[in-house]
Length: 513
Image (cartoon, rainbow, N blue to C red; front, side, top):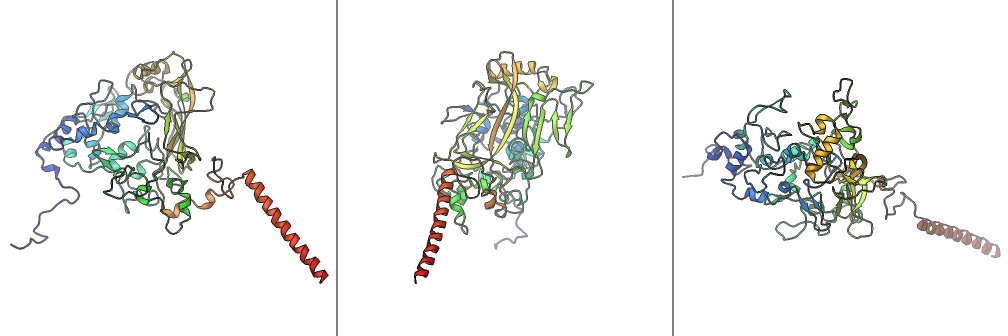
């Protein structure tokens, strides 16, 4: 027989090697998420065990350099503050089902949520308040609210699973901090299908990178970390197949340490400047504002009828909520620039606070111009004001979310919310609280602009340039160094004297002639 013509061959899917609609294990109704996972595991026998080893599952990480126990399970932040006692709400972004309190079984394979990372329909939802569970029957939630959560069709969704995408990763990471663009500034829903001007790599009609293009995954473990990021990649570009211990999510892993071919002098800058410093001129550039400050101390206001209130700016964006306090929002934000060597130290729940300091740093980025490991990095500097124990001088973890009498978002009573929250987080509480000014720095690494939009020389080499005030650098045109100024003016004076002396000698010699 001859080769079959193109018309005679059966239709074939080119983006996957499996048609999940044909799998018998998925040809049934599912009453819960764990039932779907159980079906997945009949073929993907090792997947759940691999997930169990990752930070996406544990939400816990021991920093080997600082010995701090970190991860969402342990750290405090200055936006939503802490997951402790708020698991049912926060853990809708956990890659599992049912983590509502300390009784959650981290060893259960069926508790792993496969679909949250592999959905391709866009219909998979994990509503806040259900501890990461999905809705398979219409239900009123919160109870008594009159609001109905619609069921999703798990069978159709399970039969359409595929590779992870910007949409699946973004369903959580775009909404970090409780809303679109709140937390990071360089990640929001505008990156779902961005144009080249917003991100040259994720450009939907161009390179169309997914998150996994850079954050390459091995055994379900995603490369990259906010707790131990790579600030300086000295090993150069990665050669596929070559064994190395580098990190695939860095710019250098693809572009190398000498990326500028036509303007080779710029490669000298690349020895001290992170690529992001020049190539991400602003963040929050996609039309979605990011929160720059969150003041919990002003929360609790009610209207004349005792109801919660909201305030919005001219663009209709929330700038105040009774349950959360005041916000400062911004778009097209110029970053703050810092020396960064990859080490991040956190102020944890048991650490004593210096109440006389101008600000309490929730995280501190290590680095200096002289340690040989640091680069100049752009960061989003997020300000806040949050509750602390005025006697024990420690940060407090309020119970905010929850349809119960101690949840602050329901009753607006700090005493109850703090008492309930610290019981779960295990922090001693004196019963006395106040509010303290805090700060977090978030390295900026997404929203890479086209090279034509990279920072020009005058952005930094100017009297009030972007790097003004940054220690350990001297740039012509940007600032003064007393010693260099003296040497420079001395050379100018000597040159002037030399010219005058030479001219005088020529005049004298001409007269003698």
